[in-house]
Figure 1 (cartoon, one colour):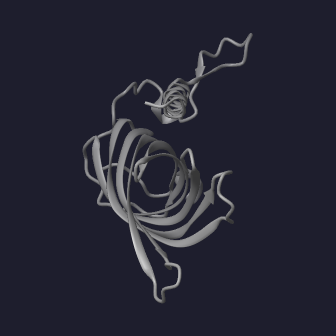
Figure 2 (figure 1 turned 60 degrees about the vertical axis):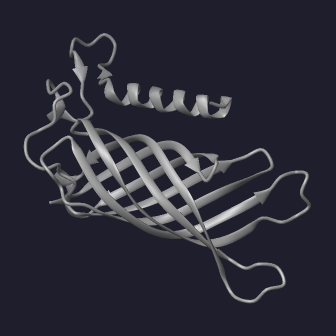
Figure 3 (figure 1 turned 180 degrees about the vertical axis):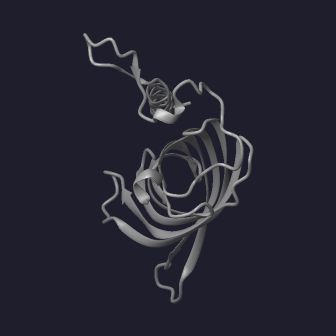
Amino acid sequence: MSARAARGAAALVLGFALAAVPSAAVAGQDQGLTYLVPDLEGAGWRVSDGPRRFAHAVAVSPAMGKLGDEDLFALRLAYNPNAWLGYEASLGHNAASSLHALIHTFNVQLRRPVPWRLQPYLTVGYGMMTVYPGAAVNADPVTKNTVTYGGGLEIYVRDDIALRGEIRAATVFGQERDREGTVAYTYREYTLGFVFYRSLASSAH
């Protein structure tokens, strides 16, 4: 594992640890612990019975993995208007020694909530990939249309925290020099990270 990947993994673990521990009460006040999600007080690492509740929930998901053969670091923000549909904005940085790329997409998540810790879903999206040549290459950044599609699995450790793994195909559309027509290049993308949920149900009514 490269030093960059090791730092990314450490950041994910630290973020998980900070999110999992409730915040302390104000110093000098005998109020015990203050929970960001009051319903989880005393719940520990249990998950509630019945299908997972996604309606009117927002989610933040840091992740790391691979795009092609290079490291990928991603941050995703999502909103679920109902139980089976989610809208997600994704920003990924594909770092390499000679060049690096930014991929930003808008994705739709489709799922059928199930009453288990394991929650599968499908995802499809559209966006742009911008490739920045390295310092040794005298060229301007190149931006191409990108379509992504795939699926993932969330493993819940608590109602508001899950481990998330995802595999996508990223198809980039471009042109070859001195040739007409569009050429499509498909890259394999896979990531592993956490997803932190916060319900807005109380304010949605």
